[in-house]
Length: 269
Length: 173
Image 1 (tube, helix red, strand yellow):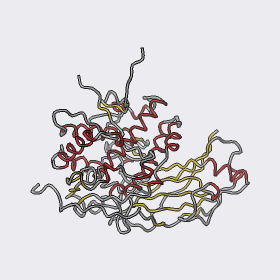
Image 2 (spheres, helix red, strand yellow):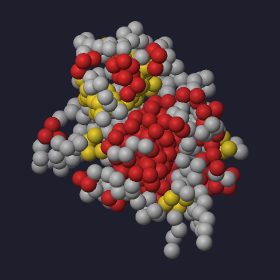
Image 3 (cartoon, chains in turn green, brown):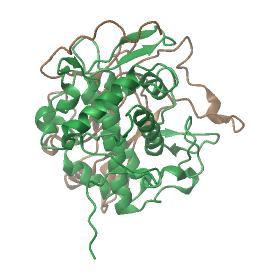
Image 4 (cartoon, chains in turn green, blue):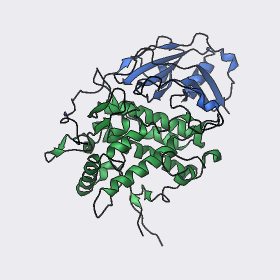
């Protein structure tokens, strides 16, 4: 029986774990069909626009908050595709970027994502190629990133305050706003053009996107532990998270999806 | 694909940090009489209704009773800073003509498609301290919103990026 995938803090990955992640990602970035990195990048914004942010309505005029459930499904499908490229011992999981950590507030983007090359080889966590021929104009270039001052990243105290919000809708709106801030911070600009993380259409091509959203997912998980796994509006439960074959109800329990964020588990008898 | 990568990646140019520009500032035209705010509340929110998110990404710093606030004003309570909201913008239209025109599919109960991605959104700033300060000072409430542009594309219009319909002040007991 398969064990749960453990998603770790990128700062705590061992060199072999980081190497395995890079090799799988590199293989994924060299595949151009629907198993590849470019395919997953194209689902979020350009040209497919499946992502859900803020309030969206489906069929009725009621507002549905699908930001957190949709991105949980998105990360899961991406992680499965990544593990498919991880060789015979696919124990890698998506790492999360703790932008509240003292290290992040000192250096900003984690070193693993910022190094141009590793032992003279391309670092697939730094950049990825965007191939979007259906865009107007067509896009065929490398991702770019111009992060802001590390001291301006969100604080742990801010995240703690979010965990005390008891209503899902309230929590989701506030967490999404922090998410929006980090996107703008990480994308930034060089004075003439912005970075991809700061633009919804191309954000998911930046390899940092996945670890940023892993953190958002982890914060939702921590909130669920405190405020209830099933603490969500009942009308959301049957909504299908297109294009994935999962409903909102399917993604509430991360262990049922096969992953966890725990870094240790010790039995006490 | 005949080639699996575009031309060689350029190492990212090391700008020290991103530089941010200020967008067009919003000033509320009619102050909200403080007499309409309940004396007792545990939380006060400023809700920004129908915020546009089609263009650049930006931070919107919200100040209460500081009409001179701008990008240089410290985001501190003593300067009337109430909080901020952030917009993760679409970056402009990369579709064909008409792609980003919002149409009324959400009004058709027989249309199974999700609503248009660019339907304007609601942002909520928890502004309890700033509203309580105004209440304590018996000062009518005037809102200033300073947009700070973070990121954009060649398809983004960076002029007049802060667009919304109205602001609600909501208090909770």
